[in-house]
Image 1 (spheres, one colour):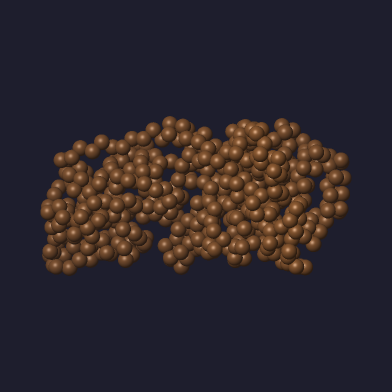
Image 2 (cartoon, one colour):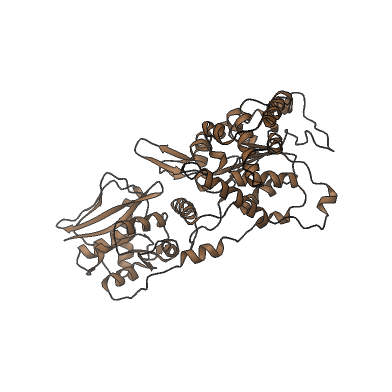
Length: 512
C-alpha cells in the first residue's frame, strides 16, 4: 500500500512543499530516496524506536520512502514525524482519513516525544498558500506557526498524540493567537532608553539624525566614553516595525533557529552585536547548509560592530555589497539562496591603539604613524558607505552627577517618525527607496538642491577641512534629513553646517 503525506523544505527564507510517499511491499529492505541528507537517512532508527515505544511495529517488509520533488535536497531531522505517520498508514496499522490534508513536521526522540524544529513560520505560510487544512507540529513551535491565520495549527507532544488526532480519537483544539493584538501591545516595550544617558547631547543628536534618515554611523572616541551604551539605545528611537517588516524579520530568525521556545512575532527591531572574531561566513551567511548570517539577522534593525579595526579585513570587505544592495546572495555548487539584509550599520572604534588620541585630559602614548596605521585598518570604500562620523568625548563629572532628567527615547522617536513620514511622501513613487540614506546619486542632485549660500559654505568646507570628494553626496543626504526633522522643505545653510561636522574621518588632517 502507498501512503502520502506532506512535509516541507526551507530554502532561504521561503519553503517548498514536499510530498512524502511511503510504499510497503514484498521484501525485507529499507530505502529512502529523493536527495535526503545524513540526518534524514538516520530517521529510520529514530522512527523505529519511537514506534516500538507506543506498541506499533516497524514493518519487516520492503519499505520505500520517496521525498518528492526528488531534485530538492532534504536536510535536517524534521521529517521524522511525517515519515512515521506514512509508515503507519502504508503498513495498515492505523487509518488516517485526513493524512493528506496536513503538513506534518517534527523531530522524534527515541521515546516518541517531539523536539522543536527550525523554519516553522515559512513552512506555515507555504502550507496556507497550498490550500492545506492545517499543520501538525511540536508544541514548542506552535505559537510561532499561529502567526499565520486561516490554517489549523495542531500542537502535539508525542508521536502517539499525532497518531490519535489523525485517527479522530483525540480532539486537539487548533491554537489561535491574536497576533496583531500581541504585536501592537509590545511595540512600545523599550529595553534601553536614552533617558538613562547623562550628557552626550551631541551624540544623541547624531543618533536622532541617523534614525530619521536610515544613515550608517561610526563613533570614534576613547574607552568608557559611552559608545556601546549609545548604540544599544538606537533601536528605541527607530520607527516601530510595521507588521510586514516584523514578519520578514521573524521569518529570518525562524530559519536560523534563533526565536527560542514558544516565540511569536518579533515586535522590536533586531539588534545584533557580533564579536570581532566573527568569520566572513558567520557575518554574511552561508555554509554547507546555507544559513542567514548576522547581517540578515539584523534585517530591519541594527548591526553594531564594536571595535571596528579589530575585525578581520576580509570580514569588513564582504559587507560592502550588502550595504549597497540591501540583500545578500549565497551561491554554492548545488544551491543559491537570497537573504534580505536591510540594516543600519553602527560602528565604534578607539581613535588609536591606546585609546587616548585627542583626549582632553589623558596623553596618547602611541608612536609616530601608529594612529594613522590604526585608522587605515578600516578601508576607504567601507567608510564611503558610512554617512555620519561622530567624535565621542568623555562625559564630564558635572554631567554624570546631574539630576536633570535626560530626554526619553519616546520623545526622540516622535521627531524621527515625523522625519520618516516626510520621506515616505517624497519617495512614494520609488518603492526601492524609502529613506534619505538610500537615495542614488541622480536622485541626490534632484532632491538635495541648495541655495547659493549653501554652495559657498560647502565649497569652503571642502577646501579648508580637506574633505574628500566622496563626502559631497553624504553631506547632502544628511543635510536633507536634518531639514526633514526641522520640518523644512528646503536645505538651509544651518542644515548644511551641521551635516559637515559629521564627516570628521574624511578630513585629510585628522590623525595626520
